[in-house]
Amino acid sequence: MAGEAKTGSSMPRFDNCSAVHANSSCAMMAGATLAVLPLLILFVFLQRFFVDSIVGSAIKG
Image (cartoon, rainbow, N blue to C red; front, side):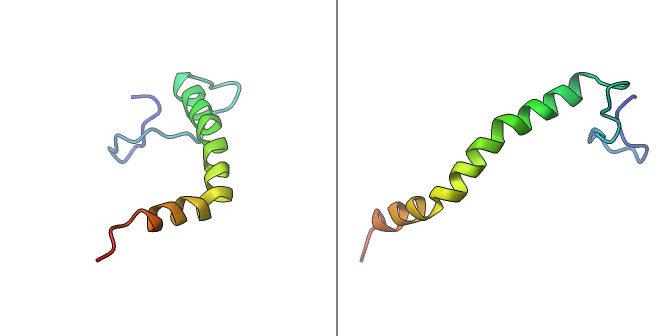
């Protein structure tokens, strides 16, 4: 099957995502990366506030 590794793995290969071989899996991988990247950057900058709120809401014994 096209796009799968030759070792029998079901994981798709993205090493052939050029303009000549563009397909839907390449487009979906690029779209997923662009969708997650802003959230990841936001989390890195606001990580301290997430941790503080989790620690502050913990039940103290």
